[in-house]
Length: 319
Image 1 (cartoon, helix red, strand yellow):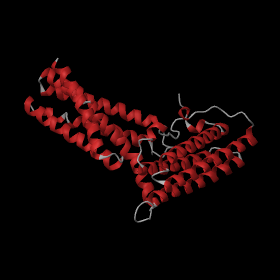
Image 2 (cartoon, one colour; image 1 turned 135 degrees about the horizontal axis):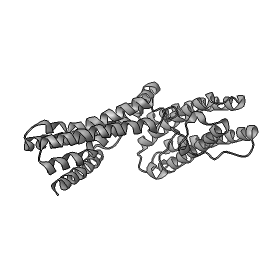
Image 3 (cartoon, one colour; image 1 turned 60 degrees about the vertical axis):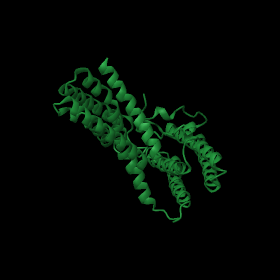
Image 4 (cartoon, one colour; image 1 turned 180 degrees about the horizontal axis):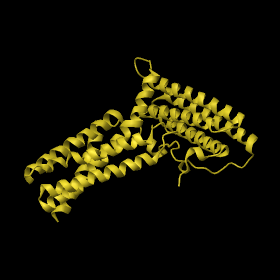
């Protein structure tokens, strides 16, 4: 099982830092290779950042050797709860240039948070000094990443604090809320409508929907709260994220459950279907606004998933 970050010793913290810098350098190199023809300015900045990340890894390695010798601990990202996660390189190929710039900003923000937390966890003066220096460098990288993204825009100006605040709002509130809303709206469709078509009774369908919504909300809330303590990723307090995710999951399921309080089955079913359409449209809009997903693509993905689950519920209930 993954260990909490505060349980790592100094050698393990340095090993994670080395791995992180090496991984980030490879990611920046991959981004630069993709963008060098159409976006040469962005690619040059990414290459500079790639080389600097490799330099950081070298400094960290030399510091480790000087303090602890040649035996580097084997500690993987997935071994540490809440440690910085990175999208796989194959997935990065799907990002637009603007999404790449935003991804780099987030990566540098997370890296700075990691070094600040790591420096507080070591008593070795030379190691702490290096970690604090790298935190300052990563803060500069964050500004650089923000700057080259905005330099492509006409204004040429950037309010770093506003952008950071917006990013953290998305990480801490929008993402867990959206995950809950999607799970609650889509995953509860099958049991609710299966019960409705199986019994042709609004009351029975309401009880099934209520149970499914509350159960899913509790499950998603705990899963989100336990997945990441937020110390390194900057995603905020786990209990707040878990509460948001759980409530939005319940809300997503309750939305198309409440119409079954209407005694007439036909009317209740018609209203429930209309509510489902509104829920799916709301999810698509949120993904478009906050996750930079094209509106048509977001609508298609959400509608297809919702319709498939909806049909599943009808077929099972009518069997």
